[in-house]
Length: 285
Image 1 (cartoon, rainbow, N blue to C red):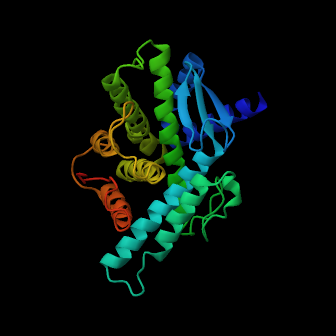
Image 2: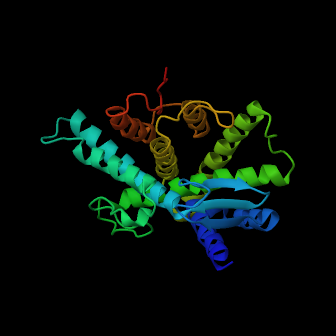
């Protein structure tokens, strides 16, 4: 019970931080649906990458998946930096560190005890934030939105279940439609009221939207890494490329903005090694 209570507190704190302007709404959601977050073993019978909702109020996850969402933000950032360095002709530009970070991600994904795998150089331990002048501060902050987006997706499944609107297990189209809907919910929850946050903190609404959008893109990047070669449509989930396209539509303006460019560069670096990987503005044949 202690582990469950601790997980509930940690998740609530994380979600309050990804969209502080919606804290009152989130408090009401917590009271209405009473979600329960269960922290599982990293190498238990549920599998290695665990992030799932069920039984009307339970969201199960493990330390591994949270470690991967943290690490995935840094891998995505390194992809963006590496590709940018190549495009501007920076001397000594290389994808070597990016490749090493992908390998590290894969080891964390596969190892029985992921905590035994040292993180790449300069990547802080999950949950610790470097000083604001440290180049690793940016991806550390973005990692919070990665995990927050994924958890909000699962909370939407809980809502569907309690409201009697969850897809039947024998209705493949309905199950895939529910996944699209949960993606939409998580994306809009983080982005729809950025104007309120901007007013409260006297900052640019565009800047807030940009930062949170990159965080969502990096969540998708992490999921692409974790599901390598399993990106196609299944009985329960749409093709990952289709999900990315749909999520981009929910992000806001259709014009290409800086968040799109950063995401495109991160995925573009991934295509250097995995040409068939999905990504923004790409159609996978």
